[in-house]
Image 1: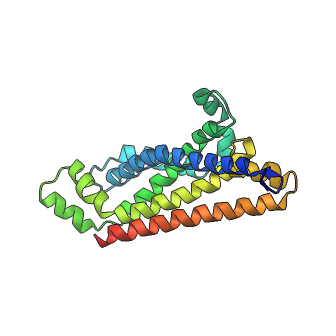
Image 2 (image 1 turned 135 degrees about the horizontal axis):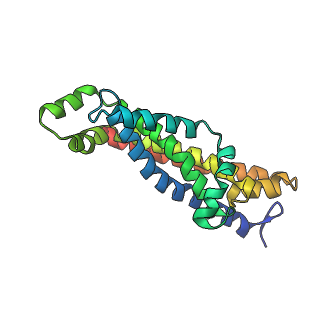
Image 3 (image 1 turned 120 degrees about the vertical axis):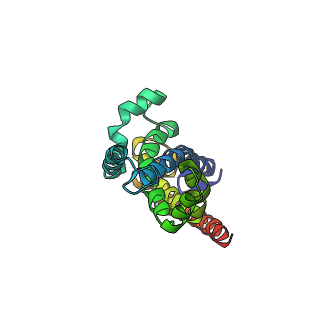
Amino acid sequence: MTMIGIVPLHQFLDAIVQTLYMVFASLAIGAVLGIILGVVLVVTRPGGVLSNRLVFGVLNPIINIVRSVPFIILMVAVLPFTRLLVGTTVGTNAAIVPLVIYVGPYIARLVENSLLEVPQGIIEAAQSMGATSWQIIRRFLIPEARASLILSLTTATIGLIGATAMAGTIGAGGLGDLAITYGYQRFDTVVMVVTVVVLVVIVQLIQGLGNVLARRFRAQ
C-alpha cells in the first residue's frame, strides 16, 4: 500500500476530493447569495438606480457584522443552525453551512466593489436610452464588470480553500482535517508538507484559471 507519511494514499486522495467538494459546493451557493446581495447594495445605495435608504441601511451593516466575525468563531457559533439544517455538526456537508455564511457576505463586498468600478457614464447613457432598472443591471452593469467579477470570485474561491482547512478543526474532513489529525497531532512532517504543497498547487491553478478568463472577457 502506497503511503504518504503515515497516511495511505487513498485516504489522502479522499481528503483532496472532500476539500474540493466543500469549496465548490459552498462557492456555488455562496456566489448566488453574494451576487444578489452585491447587486442590491449597488443599486439601492444613495444615487443608485433603485436608491432605497432603508434597504441599504439595513443590509450594509448586516454584511459588515457577519464579515467581521472570524471564520473559526463563526463556525462554532452556527453549530446549532448547522445541526438544524443537515442533522449533524461534523463532516463535509455540515461544513458547507458555515462556509456559505462566511463566503456569501464576502462575495457581496467583492461584487459591490466590482460593480462600482463601472463608469457612471455607462449607466447614465443607458438611462438616457430609456432602459429600465433591470435592463441596466442585466445588460450594462454586470456585463461591463464581468472581468472584475471573475477575479472577485477567484479571490473568494481561494479564501474558501483556507476556510475549509480551518473547518478541519471541528472534523469537517478534507486536507485541513488530515493535516491536524496526522500532521500536527501525530507529528508527521511529511503529511503536513505534502498537504501544504497540494493546497498551494490548487490555489495556483484556480488563480491562473481566473486570470485567463478575466483577460478573455477584457479582450472582448
